[in-house]
Length: 109
Figure 1 (tube, rainbow, N blue to C red):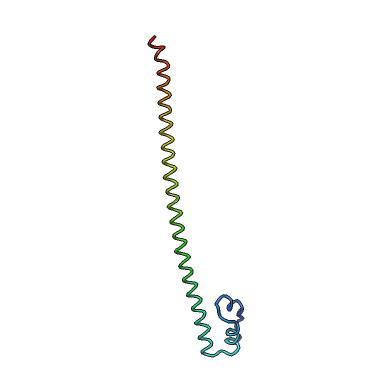
Figure 2: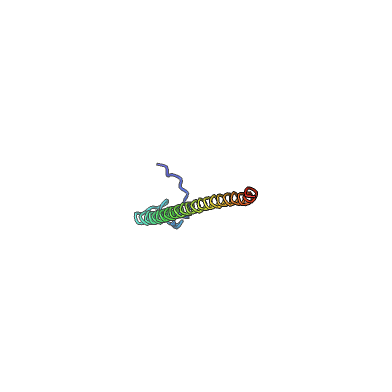
């Protein structure tokens, strides 16, 4: 049976297992050495799972924070639009009142 080609340097780098241990497992595996390498790989995978979970939590928090800020900005802009509309209406009413006051002496006299 032919052995599968495995990039041991990549495995060593990313799994945190010394290159010499991986070489020994491929050349002359022993039960203790294989168990040691597998335990190191399992530990690394658990660490990665924990990191993945933590990043998911942070991403969710960032998303909720951004959503909340978006809602606040929307509420602020809606209030500002309402204020502008109220001021526009007041200005229009004052303009009408001013025209009436200007025309009043002409009508009375």
